[in-house]
Length: 298
Length: 280
Image (cartoon, rainbow over the protein chains, first blue to last red):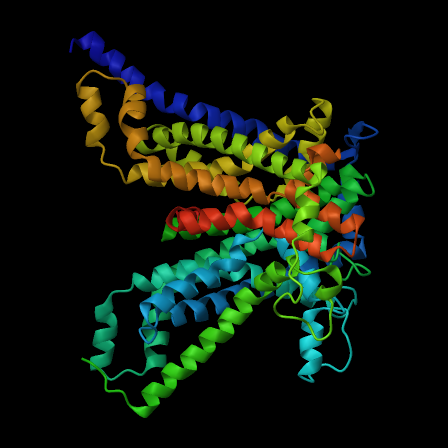
């Protein structure tokens, strides 16, 4: 190669990666970063999109949201829904992963059960919502089983009474989401070196001691990163709640996403909805920062 | 070191199997109930006591769905949008992943962090500006609106998945092309793409699933019945005839078929995609 050719080659090596990345960067820039700026600017306008009045509104919309008791109720419901979901996703995922990983069951049974335990994961949120509406109908199969077992005395309207609705949607979400943990933890379990357990056996460790001192510490990185992701995603859940309860009855299952959606597309107050959307964005970004720090420290 | 089968040992094994059955009931009963209800008549669904197996097996719910052009259109829309987005995503992500995997360049680290963090942006936050954009560019209620907005959410995952896959391929392969005087572009298409098929399949599967499951944008950015996708169709069905549970279940079964089939045929790729969020 001549020197000229070589320098042209080097130039190509410097420019090429940007060319390969450019379609993605254009899309992410125009359809993700720009809209984020837009939504922030909407939240400071008097009336965005419909009845366009883009004059500066100051913090008016934020004040309106923070003065709205429904917003605080939604925040609380979101927290409850998300925390319970993550805790139970993790617990159930862990129990299922440990059971499937046990050498007490035969391999064929293990493979069949693994496929079946993953099932809830294969269904769209809307379908999960419809299934649980059918199951939890006042005349549905869950009430009928519980009454036959004598656990409840009369039919419960799970989704349409304010006392049970939030628990019911949370339960449906717990059912729908544990397989992510199960699959990740199962992969993690298979990665723990066997000699750790052999050494523990020689020392006469009991099963629960092996669990606490070997298994759980070894799985910790997976547990933490999946919990963070699960938290961020669960916080944003919309369709499951929208289809089962629509945020009702009397706001008892209103979460931040349904609250924002209603502000935007039922009340057509897009500026105030933008303010609420920015609040959700900030919470997500805070958690994401935490997640990225954690991943980098690993 | 083999343990002897003591009574205690056997008891633990029995307890474990009981727990496994309980777990199976928890995981699979709701799905079984959906499936069995879709083959029942509407009156049988609420029969007391509930019938575990359909007493009068009927396909009337499926016939009602498959015989209705409006509902078939939901399926067509879902497949069309999901396929279009998958093709576009995989192409664009492949190029980006190639850039990430095979080149060192200024800003690589921060771009990578940017892409990881876009995974967690709440859809509801983007929905409002998207609505504004879609209305002002007059693409409200079109396929274009859905395809463009879905692309934003599928792309980050696809790039991370593909980059992860390309990183596992030895660099000597494309360097050989460079030695022969080929450009990186030739290396990509001649060498990388043919051996990246497993990665491409996993990425496609995951992208397809994301699109198939999407609800919020489809709900907001389309309006006419002929533009609706399956998830919205199910919701509409629920609004229209609140008591046609067998039809809703049949539609749910049909709407879950692609995911179930992909899972059963390509379990490995499916799991690779579904756990993609947790990879670095």
